[in-house]
Amino acid sequence: MTNRSMGEIVRRQNPACLPARASVQEACRLMRDRRIGAILVTDDQGRLVGLFTGRDAVTRVGAEARDPAATTLEQVMTRNPDTTHPRTRAIEVLRLMSDAGYRHLPILDEGRIVGIVSKGDFLGLERARHDDETGFWEIM
Image (cartoon, rainbow, N blue to C red; front, side, top):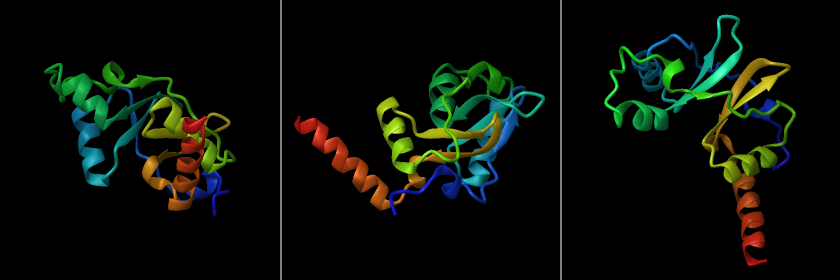
């Protein structure tokens, strides 16, 4: 089925969230323990303010020789990341992620964090449809 919504994909998800003041080390441990590639970064009211990924750990922390225990997520996160809505269709999100080069995309409903989607969350049919569309446009 290629008509799934983001709400169907993240129905029972408990997204990993940490406050902006949390350390990179804490975030990396959480990503390791939960076997995930991204952390949603929140303010004191639980609103999304950023996204921290494994790629950020490498490029903004490791490559810059920052101390992960002393560096906060606020210092190295992607601020105000693009988001999507639970009713958005999977193929539309896959297109957005592909066009923008995202691996992860937070899902918000009226400002409330619902979950996060990664490229691995999409079914083969959704990826095949996207590949077909991409191939079509490359021919044109």
